Image 1: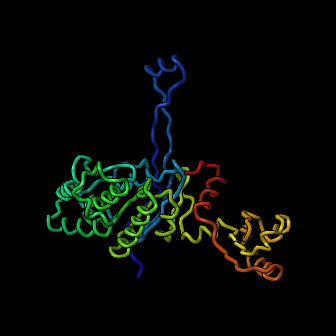
Image 2: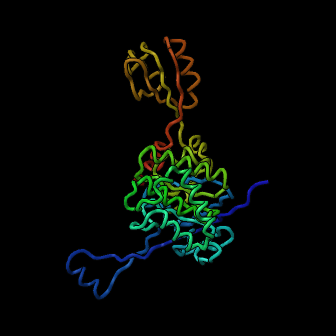
Length: 334
């Protein structure tokens, strides 16, 4: 039996009305008397559904409408038109029952008090949510141990490193054990080790608690390691909704073939071009870009014609595919 849909979005649209200033002093004086406005669409007719327990990547270039969509689903913004339901609630009605069942974590915003120890900040959050003290303390102890920040709970938030602070922000977001979690760039600015720790924690939390998670990230490693399904939006409209592997099948018509062979490495680029586009060439190996349908015959030809020590076929990095998609659509990448 399939899990029920906990997020349902139907033709969601958000248009902002912005002041348009005319150039020069005359324009500035005119604007004092009569202002001109223009409508800027941030999200246009976006529709999708997410089932309970899904971990979905939400992708798009800067300005695509990702954060605006998350803010509407969190009830921070009212849509211009369209509808949405999260856990059976209309988000922008901000019902108390809904606010206790979701969390929004913005990677570049802080919800903890900088001049308090992290433990006191978390205790305040627990009081705000009306959580019993023993339950809150047990949750903080469990999450801080999983995130390896137990020893930092009594440190002032402003004195924590960026990675430690983000882990505390995660604990604050999960303190009331939300059923739905919206994550907007949770690993931005973190070092590689902190990114890995946060990803491992999110994967474990999703698997054990069945929390429904919608994640935006500029780090494709986050998406590749955590999400089977991705939703891609561009210029405020839905561009793709499906499995991550389908992105590869649909938009990546080639693979990267690494040929480990000193003899092949000594061949001219003109000769190697018979097999595929030469991407890299050093003293012991060659990296080729080969059409998917030609991988098998190219491998056979290489093995027949050259003393090959090893062949390694890999998918194109998802980050390159996403960059290529938006590049072809004429939108600045993120």
